[in-house]
Image (cartoon, rainbow, N blue to C red; front, side):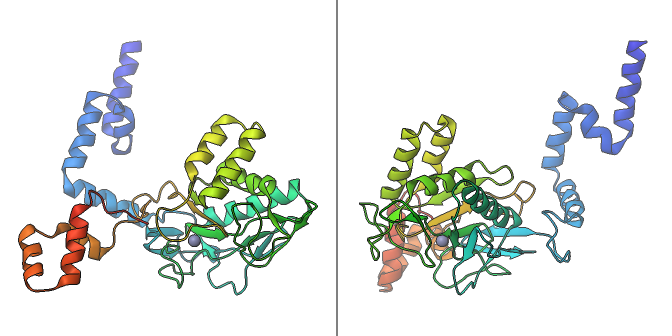
Length: 315
Ligand SMILES: [Zn+2]
Protein backbone atom coordinates (compact mmCIF):
# COMPACT_ATOMS: atom_id res chain seq x y z
CA UNK A 1 0.00 0.00 0.00
CA UNK A 2 2.77 2.35 0.96
CA UNK A 3 4.59 1.44 -2.24
CA UNK A 4 1.46 2.15 -4.28
CA UNK A 5 0.98 5.53 -2.65
CA UNK A 6 4.59 6.37 -3.34
CA UNK A 7 4.16 5.34 -6.98
CA UNK A 8 1.02 7.47 -7.25
CA UNK A 9 2.79 10.42 -5.69
CA UNK A 10 5.73 10.06 -8.03
CA UNK A 11 3.56 9.89 -11.15
CA UNK A 12 1.59 12.94 -9.95
CA UNK A 13 4.83 14.82 -9.64
CA UNK A 14 5.84 13.83 -13.14
CA UNK A 15 2.43 14.59 -14.65
CA UNK A 16 2.08 18.11 -13.30
CA UNK A 17 4.55 20.46 -14.90
CA UNK A 18 4.58 22.91 -12.01
CA UNK A 19 5.12 20.08 -9.58
CA UNK A 20 7.95 18.60 -11.56
CA UNK A 21 10.79 20.38 -9.88
CA UNK A 22 9.13 20.00 -6.50
CA UNK A 23 8.35 16.32 -6.92
CA UNK A 24 11.83 15.44 -8.10
CA UNK A 25 13.75 17.81 -5.83
CA UNK A 26 17.09 16.40 -4.85
CA UNK A 27 16.83 13.34 -7.06
CA UNK A 28 19.28 12.63 -9.90
CA UNK A 29 16.42 13.36 -12.30
CA UNK A 30 15.97 16.79 -10.71
CA UNK A 31 19.65 17.51 -11.12
CA UNK A 32 19.35 16.52 -14.77
CA UNK A 33 16.28 18.71 -15.24
CA UNK A 34 18.13 21.66 -13.70
CA UNK A 35 21.24 21.20 -15.78
CA UNK A 36 19.11 20.71 -18.93
CA UNK A 37 17.39 24.01 -18.25
CA UNK A 38 20.75 25.66 -17.69
CA UNK A 39 22.11 24.21 -20.94
CA UNK A 40 19.05 25.07 -23.00
CA UNK A 41 19.01 28.79 -23.76
CA UNK A 42 15.42 28.67 -25.02
CA UNK A 43 14.29 27.25 -21.68
CA UNK A 44 16.16 30.04 -19.93
CA UNK A 45 14.66 32.66 -22.22
CA UNK A 46 11.21 31.23 -21.57
CA UNK A 47 11.80 31.40 -17.83
CA UNK A 48 13.02 35.01 -18.21
CA UNK A 49 9.89 35.91 -20.19
CA UNK A 50 7.67 34.41 -17.56
CA UNK A 51 9.41 36.14 -14.68
CA UNK A 52 9.37 39.50 -16.49
CA UNK A 53 5.57 39.36 -16.39
CA UNK A 54 5.76 39.31 -12.61
CA UNK A 55 6.86 42.66 -11.19
CA UNK A 56 9.78 42.06 -8.88
CA UNK A 57 10.26 44.08 -5.76
CA UNK A 58 7.51 45.81 -3.88
CA UNK A 59 5.01 48.06 -5.59
CA UNK A 60 5.77 51.76 -5.35
CA UNK A 61 3.52 54.00 -3.31
CA UNK A 62 1.53 55.14 -6.32
CA UNK A 63 1.21 51.51 -7.38
CA UNK A 64 2.25 52.27 -10.96
CA UNK A 65 5.76 50.86 -11.05
CA UNK A 66 7.49 47.93 -9.41
CA UNK A 67 10.30 48.91 -7.10
CA UNK A 68 13.63 47.92 -8.58
CA UNK A 69 17.30 48.77 -8.14
CA UNK A 70 18.75 48.37 -11.61
CA UNK A 71 22.47 48.08 -12.29
CA UNK A 72 25.14 49.09 -9.82
CA UNK A 73 25.49 51.97 -7.34
CA UNK A 74 27.85 53.74 -9.78
CA UNK A 75 25.98 52.95 -12.97
CA UNK A 76 22.40 52.36 -12.15
CA UNK A 77 18.79 53.41 -12.09
CA UNK A 78 15.89 53.26 -9.73
CA UNK A 79 12.30 52.43 -10.46
CA UNK A 80 9.29 52.90 -8.20
CA UNK A 81 11.30 54.88 -5.64
CA UNK A 82 10.07 55.58 -2.12
CA UNK A 83 10.71 59.00 -0.64
CA UNK A 84 12.30 59.52 2.74
CA UNK A 85 10.55 62.21 4.76
CA UNK A 86 11.58 64.26 7.77
CA UNK A 87 9.92 63.51 11.10
CA UNK A 88 10.76 63.98 14.79
CA UNK A 89 13.52 61.40 14.75
CA UNK A 90 14.92 62.26 11.32
CA UNK A 91 15.84 65.45 9.50
CA UNK A 92 16.58 65.59 5.80
CA UNK A 93 19.45 67.97 5.18
CA UNK A 94 18.36 70.97 3.13
CA UNK A 95 18.03 71.25 0.22
CA UNK A 96 16.74 67.68 0.04
CA UNK A 97 17.63 67.08 -3.59
CA UNK A 98 17.86 63.29 -3.56
CA UNK A 99 15.59 61.77 -0.89
CA UNK A 100 14.59 58.67 -2.88
CA UNK A 101 15.55 55.06 -2.44
CA UNK A 102 14.45 51.49 -2.32
CA UNK A 103 11.76 50.94 0.34
CA UNK A 104 14.27 48.68 2.09
CA UNK A 105 16.67 51.62 2.50
CA UNK A 106 14.03 54.23 3.36
CA UNK A 107 12.48 51.83 5.86
CA UNK A 108 15.79 50.95 7.48
CA UNK A 109 16.80 54.60 7.92
CA UNK A 110 13.44 55.42 9.48
CA UNK A 111 13.41 52.41 11.80
CA UNK A 112 16.97 53.06 12.99
CA UNK A 113 16.28 56.76 13.66
CA UNK A 114 13.20 55.81 15.70
CA UNK A 115 15.10 53.14 17.58
CA UNK A 116 17.87 55.53 18.61
CA UNK A 117 15.39 58.24 19.56
CA UNK A 118 13.37 55.72 21.57
CA UNK A 119 16.45 54.94 23.60
CA UNK A 120 17.99 58.41 23.66
CA UNK A 121 15.25 61.06 23.71
CA UNK A 122 15.84 64.17 21.64
CA UNK A 123 17.95 62.36 19.03
CA UNK A 124 17.50 63.55 15.46
CA UNK A 125 19.22 61.69 12.65
CA UNK A 126 20.52 64.02 9.94
CA UNK A 127 20.23 62.44 6.49
CA UNK A 128 21.83 63.79 3.30
CA UNK A 129 21.51 62.38 -0.19
CA UNK A 130 20.04 59.04 -1.11
CA UNK A 131 19.21 58.87 -4.84
CA UNK A 132 17.17 60.90 -7.28
CA UNK A 133 13.70 59.65 -8.12
CA UNK A 134 14.74 57.76 -11.26
CA UNK A 135 18.26 57.04 -10.04
CA UNK A 136 21.29 57.78 -12.23
CA UNK A 137 24.15 60.22 -11.60
CA UNK A 138 23.81 63.03 -9.06
CA UNK A 139 26.27 65.86 -8.60
CA UNK A 140 28.93 65.34 -5.97
CA UNK A 141 28.65 61.55 -5.84
CA UNK A 142 30.28 58.69 -7.65
CA UNK A 143 27.60 56.28 -6.48
CA UNK A 144 24.05 56.81 -5.11
CA UNK A 145 22.65 55.84 -8.53
CA UNK A 146 20.48 52.84 -7.76
CA UNK A 147 18.57 53.62 -4.56
CA UNK A 148 20.79 51.63 -2.20
CA UNK A 149 23.08 54.38 -0.82
CA UNK A 150 22.51 57.04 1.81
CA UNK A 151 24.73 59.67 3.46
CA UNK A 152 23.96 60.05 7.13
CA UNK A 153 25.35 62.60 9.61
CA UNK A 154 26.77 61.73 13.00
CA UNK A 155 25.15 62.26 16.38
CA UNK A 156 26.93 64.83 18.56
CA UNK A 157 26.98 65.75 22.25
CA UNK A 158 28.23 68.90 23.96
CA UNK A 159 30.95 69.08 26.61
CA UNK A 160 28.48 67.99 29.29
CA UNK A 161 27.40 64.99 27.25
CA UNK A 162 24.05 66.57 26.36
CA UNK A 163 22.42 65.61 23.05
CA UNK A 164 22.98 68.29 20.38
CA UNK A 165 21.40 68.62 16.96
CA UNK A 166 23.08 69.87 13.80
CA UNK A 167 21.71 70.60 10.36
CA UNK A 168 24.91 69.93 8.43
CA UNK A 169 27.60 67.30 8.29
CA UNK A 170 30.55 68.11 10.57
CA UNK A 171 34.07 66.71 10.12
CA UNK A 172 35.38 64.94 13.19
CA UNK A 173 39.04 65.14 14.18
CA UNK A 174 41.10 62.24 15.54
CA UNK A 175 40.35 63.45 19.07
CA UNK A 176 36.62 62.98 18.45
CA UNK A 177 35.79 66.71 18.37
CA UNK A 178 33.97 68.43 15.50
CA UNK A 179 36.57 70.33 13.49
CA UNK A 180 34.55 73.53 13.07
CA UNK A 181 32.68 73.29 16.37
CA UNK A 182 35.08 72.02 19.01
CA UNK A 183 32.37 72.26 21.65
CA UNK A 184 30.73 69.26 19.96
CA UNK A 185 31.98 65.68 20.20
CA UNK A 186 31.20 62.55 18.22
CA UNK A 187 28.72 60.66 20.38
CA UNK A 188 30.01 57.08 20.35
CA UNK A 189 27.05 55.83 22.36
CA UNK A 190 24.38 56.93 19.86
CA UNK A 191 26.48 56.49 16.72
CA UNK A 192 27.12 52.91 17.79
CA UNK A 193 23.39 52.47 18.53
CA UNK A 194 22.72 53.65 14.99
CA UNK A 195 25.22 51.25 13.41
CA UNK A 196 23.84 48.42 15.52
CA UNK A 197 20.27 49.26 14.47
CA UNK A 198 21.30 49.11 10.81
CA UNK A 199 23.20 45.85 11.18
CA UNK A 200 20.39 44.14 13.06
CA UNK A 201 17.52 45.55 11.03
CA UNK A 202 14.86 42.85 10.65
CA UNK A 203 14.03 43.63 7.02
CA UNK A 204 17.11 45.05 5.32
CA UNK A 205 20.63 43.78 4.95
CA UNK A 206 23.50 46.26 5.01
CA UNK A 207 26.31 45.71 2.52
CA UNK A 208 28.76 48.16 4.04
CA UNK A 209 29.10 51.42 5.93
CA UNK A 210 31.83 53.81 4.85
CA UNK A 211 33.36 55.84 7.66
CA UNK A 212 36.88 57.06 8.41
CA UNK A 213 39.39 54.66 9.94
CA UNK A 214 39.64 56.71 13.13
CA UNK A 215 35.88 56.74 13.69
CA UNK A 216 35.60 53.05 12.83
CA UNK A 217 38.17 52.31 15.57
CA UNK A 218 36.30 54.52 18.02
CA UNK A 219 33.00 52.76 17.36
CA UNK A 220 34.44 49.26 17.58
CA UNK A 221 36.35 50.09 20.77
CA UNK A 222 33.17 51.47 22.31
CA UNK A 223 31.18 48.37 21.33
CA UNK A 224 33.88 46.00 22.59
CA UNK A 225 34.13 47.80 25.93
CA UNK A 226 30.35 47.70 26.26
CA UNK A 227 30.31 43.93 25.83
CA UNK A 228 28.31 43.96 22.63
CA UNK A 229 27.09 40.58 21.40
CA UNK A 230 30.14 39.18 19.59
CA UNK A 231 28.48 38.28 16.26
CA UNK A 232 27.24 41.88 15.95
CA UNK A 233 30.72 43.15 16.74
CA UNK A 234 32.21 40.91 14.04
CA UNK A 235 29.58 42.02 11.58
CA UNK A 236 30.36 45.66 12.38
CA UNK A 237 34.09 45.08 11.95
CA UNK A 238 33.40 43.77 8.46
CA UNK A 239 30.78 46.32 7.46
CA UNK A 240 32.52 49.50 8.69
CA UNK A 241 35.33 50.59 6.41
CA UNK A 242 37.13 53.60 5.09
CA UNK A 243 37.00 53.51 1.30
CA UNK A 244 40.38 52.92 -0.33
CA UNK A 245 39.81 55.91 -2.62
CA UNK A 246 37.90 59.15 -2.46
CA UNK A 247 36.57 60.80 0.68
CA UNK A 248 37.72 59.52 4.04
CA UNK A 249 34.15 59.89 5.39
CA UNK A 250 35.08 61.77 8.55
CA UNK A 251 31.89 63.85 8.40
CA UNK A 252 29.23 61.25 7.61
CA UNK A 253 28.39 57.59 7.27
CA UNK A 254 27.72 56.29 3.80
CA UNK A 255 25.52 53.25 4.19
CA UNK A 256 24.86 50.90 1.29
CA UNK A 257 22.30 48.15 1.50
CA UNK A 258 22.54 44.82 -0.30
CA UNK A 259 20.46 43.99 -3.35
CA UNK A 260 17.03 42.91 -2.09
CA UNK A 261 16.32 39.22 -2.53
CA UNK A 262 14.36 38.70 -5.73
CA UNK A 263 16.16 41.53 -7.55
CA UNK A 264 19.51 39.88 -7.93
CA UNK A 265 19.04 39.42 -11.67
CA UNK A 266 18.74 43.20 -12.22
CA UNK A 267 20.58 44.60 -9.20
CA UNK A 268 24.36 44.52 -9.24
CA UNK A 269 25.87 44.33 -5.76
CA UNK A 270 29.15 46.14 -6.36
CA UNK A 271 30.30 48.73 -8.89
CA UNK A 272 32.15 47.44 -11.90
CA UNK A 273 35.21 49.14 -13.39
CA UNK A 274 34.18 51.99 -15.66
CA UNK A 275 33.68 51.25 -19.37
CA UNK A 276 36.86 53.11 -20.20
CA UNK A 277 38.81 50.96 -17.80
CA UNK A 278 37.17 47.80 -19.07
CA UNK A 279 38.14 48.82 -22.59
CA UNK A 280 41.66 49.47 -21.44
CA UNK A 281 41.71 46.15 -19.62
CA UNK A 282 40.76 44.28 -22.75
CA UNK A 283 43.39 46.03 -24.87
CA UNK A 284 45.75 43.64 -26.61
CA UNK A 285 49.54 44.10 -26.49
CA UNK A 286 49.58 45.12 -30.19
CA UNK A 287 47.03 47.83 -29.46
CA UNK A 288 49.14 49.10 -26.55
CA UNK A 289 52.19 49.28 -28.80
CA UNK A 290 50.13 51.01 -31.47
CA UNK A 291 48.90 53.59 -28.98
CA UNK A 292 52.40 54.23 -27.72
CA UNK A 293 53.70 54.69 -31.28
CA UNK A 294 50.90 57.04 -32.23
CA UNK A 295 51.96 59.26 -29.34
CA UNK A 296 48.63 58.99 -27.55
CA UNK A 297 50.57 59.28 -24.36
CA UNK A 298 47.68 59.69 -21.96
CA UNK A 299 45.82 56.69 -23.34
CA UNK A 300 48.97 54.59 -23.54
CA UNK A 301 49.85 55.65 -20.02
CA UNK A 302 46.46 54.50 -18.87
CA UNK A 303 46.89 51.22 -20.67
CA UNK A 304 50.32 50.67 -19.19
CA UNK A 305 49.17 51.58 -15.71
CA UNK A 306 46.14 49.36 -15.96
CA UNK A 307 48.12 46.49 -17.39
CA UNK A 308 50.40 46.61 -14.39
CA UNK A 309 47.48 46.19 -12.00
CA UNK A 310 46.33 42.72 -11.26
CA UNK A 311 42.87 44.00 -10.51
CA UNK A 312 41.27 47.32 -11.27
CA UNK A 313 39.98 48.64 -8.02
CA UNK A 314 36.36 49.64 -7.87
CA UNK A 315 34.74 52.38 -5.84
ZN1 LIG B 1 27.70 58.84 -0.12
